[in-house]
Length: 199
Image (cartoon, rainbow, N blue to C red; front, side):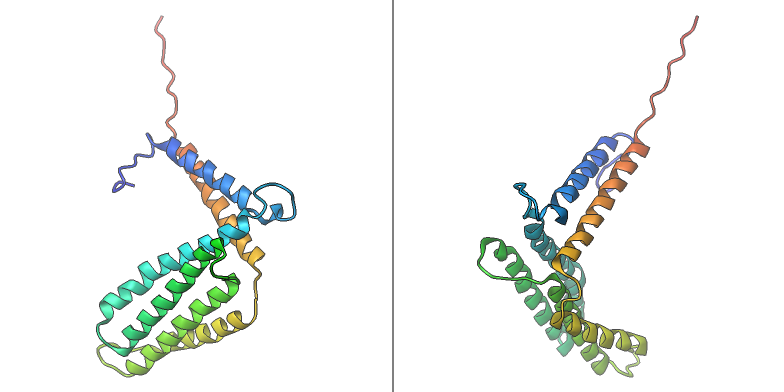
């Protein structure tokens, strides 16, 4: 907050406003509107693909890109680049699906694809760095990588969670963030001091 030059005591109204907006967005995108005749009944389904695209872009930017930059020229870095490009196309497909250009569906399949790519790359990393003195690869990370590959394949092949369930997860998270912002803004609001009158 110091870097953003926010002072909670003075800008408490900003947190309350953002919290109210987040709560309203969560209520509008909630799946219980899907079977009604309101004009925003299908906004949640469209917003889900946008939120998935945003999550993928954040994942590529903050998780995969640093690995590519620090990785150097090796097989693992090349595989990470391929992973980033494939997920970037998936994110682009989620955005273009709003315009009926590409039909991208199945949030659980996209999640499984992410796990599949990450597990595969980590297994290759374990193979090339096995027993290395400078960059050893622990066994427990290899077990996690194999589990990610297996579970990702299962999620991609079989829809464990429907899009409606995943939308509910996003909606609940947005609602919780909004409630926390409202609470934080209310706590940081300056208390009105009572002026003492002198007789």
